Length: 325
Image (cartoon, rainbow, N blue to C red; front, side, top):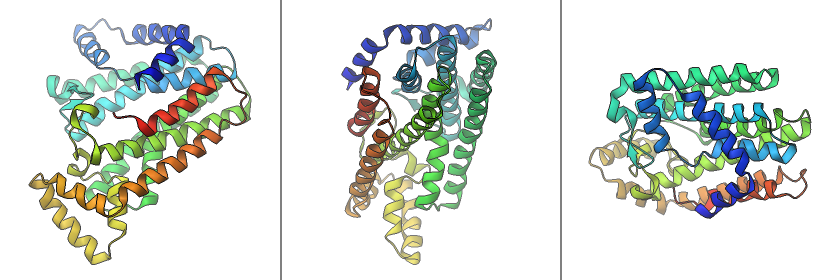
C-alpha cells in the first residue's frame, strides 16, 4: 500500500516539504539529550497520516499558508507525544517495529520527552493566532486525555459496552483525525459547511482506523504491525471483537469467561482467545461495521467537486480497510 503514499507525495510534494521543514524546526532544542531522543523518534516515524489529512483538507478548500504548515507540525507533535505517553502507560517495548523510547531511555526520560513535545505543540498554537483553531486544539487535547483515562478505567472495571467503546475511541483516536481535517480548512477558509463536512469525515475515518487496529490485535502478525499480537487483550483493553464476543453471553457466562480469560492471558494462550472470538462471529461483525462507517465517511465529501485532493482522501479510507499495519 506504499503506492498510495507515493501518489500523495506526487499530489502535494511542496506542502509535504513545507510541513517537514516546520516540524523539524519546531523540534530542535539546545538540550543534546532531547535532540538525541527526538532524532530516534523521527527515524521510526510512521506515515504521518494526520498532517497529510490536514494538508489535503486544506488543498480541498483553498491554498495552504504558513498557518497550515504550523498546524500540520502541531498535529504531528500532539500525536507523537500521545504515543510516547501511551507506551509508558502500556509498558510497551515495541513501537512501529522499533524498541520504544521508554525501553531504551526508561520512563522518566520518556515522560519528559512527551511533555516537551506537548509544550512545543502549545508554542505552535500561539503562532497560528486563530481563535477557532485554538478552541479546536484545546478541546482535542482534553478529549485525547479523557479517551485514554476512560480506556484505563474500563480496563480496571473489566467492563465496556459498545456505546462506551465508541465514546472512548472518538476521544482517544478519532478526535485527532477530526481535528486534522478541520484545521486544514480553518487555516484557509471560513466556510462552515466545508469545516463541518471535513470534521465529520475525519471523525469517521478515525473511528474505522481504530477498529482496524482492533482487528490487528486479534488477527495481525507481529512483524507486520510492530507490536505483540493480543497486546490489548493482555492489558485488559477491551477491543470491539472482544466486546462483541462478551455481548453474546449471559451475565454469568460473561463473568465466567472473564475469569477464564485472565488465566488464558497469564498462560499466553492467545490462540485460544483468537479462536473464541472468530467462532463468535465477532470478526465478520467488526469488518461489516468498519465498511459501513467507511462508506459514511466518504459521503461527507460529497459537497466537494472532484479533484486530486478529494481522490486522495477517498483512497485513504479504502487504504485503511486493506492496510496490513
